[in-house]
Length: 270
Image 1 (cartoon, rainbow, N blue to C red):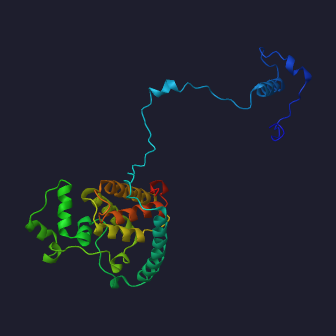
Image 2: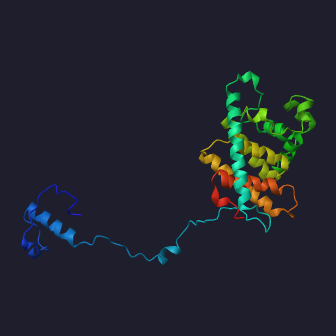
Image 3: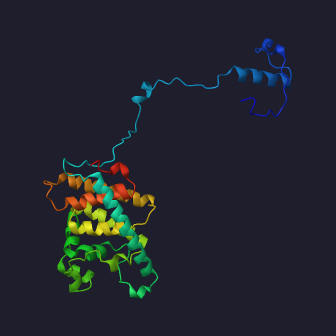
C-alpha cells in the first residue's frame, strides 16, 4: 500500500523510531507524524469485529421472509418446461405483430378509433369488458350495496348500457389503448380477479393486456404481474380436477409472467 500511495509530506525515518517513548507528547510536528506512521504500521491490514449475534436475536423487531407467496401447483397440474418455453416464444411473435398494428393505429386520427372510457372510470371499463351483472356482483363482493334499477338508469346512458353483457378484447379496442390505459386496466382486472375469482373470459382480457404491455417493465407493472401470478397460482391450487377448463389459461398466464416477463422465481418447475 505504501508503494501505491504517494506521500504528500516527506517524513524521515530513523533507526531510532522504535526507541521513541510513545507515552510522552511529541516535541515537534515531524515527531508527531513519525508516531502516526509507527502506529499505522503496527495496525493489522484487516480487522474483524467479534460480535455476539445471540445478544440481538431477542431484540429483533423485523422479520424477513424469502417466500414469494406463490402457491405450488398440485401434482399433475403444472405444465412442462418445454410447453412454457413454447408459449413464451409464440407470445413474443404475437407481440411483434400486435406492436406493428398498434403503431399503424397510433398514426391514424383519433376520430377513427373507438371511444374508450377514461382511466378513472372503473365501472365503465368493467361494464365494457364483462357487463353490468359482473359489476353488480363486484360491488356486492366489495361489501357495497347494489343500486336499484332507478339509480342505475340515472348513472348509465340508457337500456343498452344496463343490459350490456361485455365484449371480448377485440383488436380494435386493444389497439386503441395507450400504455397508461393498458397499465390501469390491468390493475383493474387483477383487482376484479381477486374479488370474483377467475373465468375464461377474464383470461382472454388478461392475455390481451399482457400482449400490449411494454418492456422493460416499470416497477409498478412488475409488481402487478407478480400479484397476478400469485392470484392465478392460488386459484389453480384450489381447482378440484385437472379437467377444469380454467387450468390451461391459468397455466398460460403464470408461464408468461415467469418466462416472458422475467419473473423466473414464480416459474413452474414442470
